[in-house]
Image (cartoon, rainbow, N blue to C red; front, side):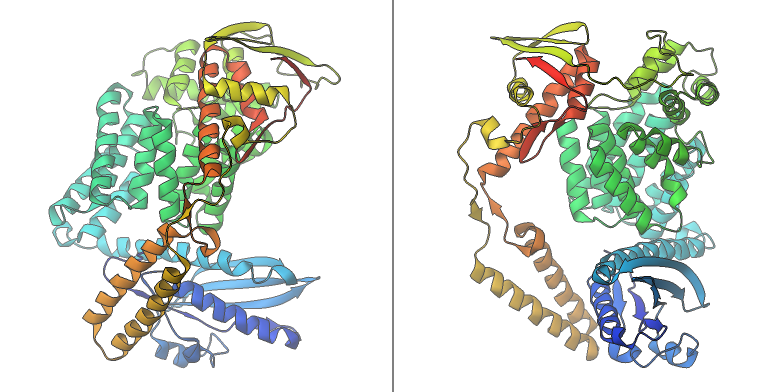
Amino acid sequence: MELVGNKETTIAVLPFQIIGAENAMNPIIKGFTEDLIINFSKFIGLSVISQYSTLGISDISDTKSITKLGADYIITGSFRAIGEGYRIGVHLIRTKDNRIVFAGNHDEAMETILNAQDTITQQMVSVLQQQIDHDLLSYSYKKESVELAAYENWLLGFNELKKGTVESDLTARKYFESALKIDPLFARAYTGLSLSYFNEWSCQLWNRWDVSQKGAHDYALKAIELDENDYVSLAVLGRTFLYLGDYEKSEYVLRKSLRMNPNDADNLVLISNCLVWLGYLEEAEQLYIKARNLNPLHPEAYLPIGMLVYFEKGDYQKAVSLGEKVANLSIWTDFTAFLAAAYFHLSEHDKMMTNWKKYMELFKKNIHDGKEVTKKEAVDWQKEVNPYLVATNLEPFWEFTLGNTSKEINKPIAPTTGSITKGNFISNGEVWELAYLNQSVTLKDSKGLHDIAKLLEQPEEQIHSAVLMGVVLETGGTSLIDDQAMKEYKNKLRSLKMDISDAEEMGLYERADSLREEYEALVEHLSQVTGLSNKIRKTGSSVEKARAAVTWRIRSSIKKIEKVHPKLAKHLTNSIKTGTCCSYEPETPHEWTV
């Protein structure tokens, strides 16, 4: 993680203090501080003061000792007993003005104290990233634009993009173009250009849809050509693939972006948004929650994404509680339409109508050139602009709005009990006959339909993806590197770390930079050949191939069903779980003829 363009940021972690007579905790707290220092030292762009220099500083008021450290930021904290657990207080302080940049608390049980280290580390690094960018922006706005470096231009442009207006998008574009004049190979400048067109495409200039869509996609591709591992560019490209309907490519590059950097809060929110459209609601929720934890200074910026996540998960009360906290209701043209739909599901007619009227006004202004608009036009636009791969909870609201259902909004719908819904999922050679909720359709044969049929035959049963594929399990696969090579890699990494430290102590900074590049390249290589828990990754496993193939086959078939029978597709989306093992788990009893 690069925190600044050309200068490392130095931090010092002071010993965490114990509030109260908990002397038995001292060893754990000392180890807690040590582990935090180790965690921070893993981030490229961060220099961490040794614990030997900070061990004797017991009070933040010891300004003389703290000044000697030469740190840009100080992290200090405390443990306080609360019931059977502890409250860990954390402060991030900027030394140049002793300003508290961030303060937060983490309540942990004794057995989970050490688990809090990763959370605190990620949170602090995220806050540092935002604070450093803010400091650099504040400085940059005071300078003439001709003096700005490429990275600073990118920051200025990105700051304009966040304003969300056509005018700010055009201003941002100028900054990105200036960055490219300084450094024609600066990938993120192309990412910025892509985002400026994306804003027009998805939110602002509907009459320039084709031009803006092409600009967003082409500039994202250009960014990846220059830096295929730039996680921001990858996320933007994943988003453009999504809106182009290329869901497989979209998911691939989004997940690659997530692997490249799983701790950038803004990027996590972008990916969370995309995963909602792709139907991965649980994962989208996890990324949203993580992003809020990593960016505690401005969580309100993520509220619209949270509203969308919980709306599609069916937690409408939580969706409206987040949505009503959003100050700028025009953040998306159809943001208030989602709120209206949430209130529809909650049977709150007045609030539904209030938000629907706001949506119609925004649609008329932003999309329809100020001309009068019909309900059908407003609904059709929502269907076209939102890139859902699977069914959406908007559908019942659309039907009600267009008068296709007689649901009484003022009366909550009582859940039915004891009744069994019946349906047909029958193969007739090259054609499948599907019947559900008094609607019958036919579809061409596909492997995914066979998978779904097997699941419908055995509700609540876990069926291995390999069984659905009809393959023999070969779980071993082929190791990408052997154990001996892994040992040699680890020895080389330890040797490089010592060499880097020696070079820095002797003032040989060019040699230290060269060694650090070698170290980072080796770490990057190891990240590609090892999996979770640093286990050697294997390739060729039929288990993994079966999982990926069956998941895609089922999802692709449900998408085809969605085009001809949305209600059936929605039911299958909510009831079928995919993965290494797949299952059909309906919320209410269903009886299928297969």
